[in-house]
Image (cartoon, rainbow, N blue to C red; front, side, top):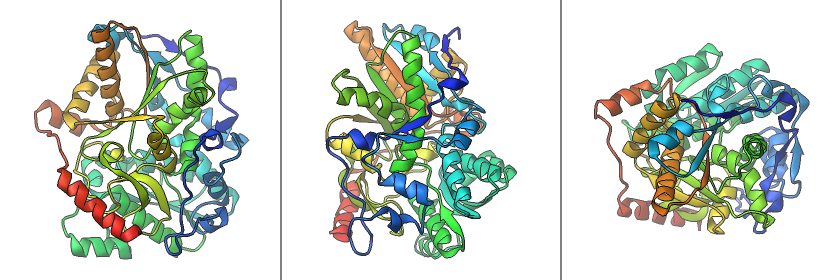
Amino acid sequence: MDSKKFLLQERDIPTAWYNVMAEMQNKPRPILNPKTKEPMKSEDLYPLFSKAASEQELNDTDTWIEIPEEVREMYKIWRPTPLVRASGLERMLDTPAHIYFKNESVSPVGSHKLNSAIPQAYYCKREGVTNITTETGAGQWGAALSLAAKHFGLELAVYMVKVSYHQKPYRRSIMQTYGAEVIASPSMSTKAGRKIITEHPNYQGSLGTAISEAVELAMSTPNCKYALGSVLNHVALHQTVIGLEAEKQMAMAEEYPDIVIGCFGGGSNFSGISFPFLRHNFSGERNTRFIAAEPSSCPKLTRGVMEYDFGDEAGYTPLIPMYTLGHNFSPANIHAGGLRYHGAGAVVSQLKKDGLIEAVDIPQLETFKAATAFARAEGIIPAPESSHAIAAAIREAEQAKLEGKSKVILFNLSGHGLIDMAAYDQYLMGDLANYEIPEKEIKDNIERLEKIIR
């Protein structure tokens, strides 16, 4: 646990977010109106999102988008976050690889999610909004937005995936402590929730279901907007503060990553650590590999199809060009609740299609094995979501050992697992299992998707 930290000063917090779409040779296909199937303009999104977020969502021309000073001032509470050389893990693995991680767990809510929660709440407040709604899986996004909403004097309703609502009661308590209302999803409070409960009384929920409920409430409540914690372009944009800081810190370490890894649910933290480094691949200066690590039980990037799909289960959202398992896919009740999402963001999907990023799917037991190894080597207990990135990093470090090559590996530690100890208890007692999705289930779900969209 003598790993070296590379620390920046407040002045090194980025003054602008990096917009990867502006530099992509093949830009994502447009999002579509779910009724007309026509490309949407930013003003078409105003009823749902803040105007600023709507404009950022479709901005594919401006490489740099200024961070508002009030947002940057709040970032200073915990940013810049440390970059750490994981020397203890390197010794444990006996690998020639150099392993670094960006420690986003030091934020007040314990994860990277605050990077986007603050600007989204700020824009809503600036535009005179009084209420916001959202969904949350494991509760990290819900906790982040609860804190941001309270800071800006906004009322917040959070639909929390039911299985996580019961698996992670203390995340629910955190949101309520910050003043948010938390509802287990699916619920009887929305049309979408009632329909799902009627058809599937024992359904334990998904992010797609929770999004449907949050969107429905936002659209039916006066002076209310919806905020999303992943998937969409403006969320990925806000998260690039992670990679922009990491660039400077890798320079301090006098190294540059050969491989950059992030766990993958909808794409927020993977995009945040990856996109700033990816721009050097665009220019031809570097040839870094980028690996998105997703659960084997929800393998959209590795086993899904690239197709237009809804971002939610009920079909309220715009149609997004994404790698997807189908918006009505029911993921297994794994403990990495933040990764139980059926699709990938449009930008990440396009980058995957073009071969600019890679994806791996990792079984649940491997992620907890990696998590406990990391905790014992580095002293930090990681979130189950982050443990997918750790497992992928360990795979690459072991491959470097086999090849006898020294590689530089960077991954994003997106959050700590101190509120996930029930999951660790189950793992240590041997009560966790892997979940494999039968190919027929994926095929049948995708066939239904094609009939709906085409």
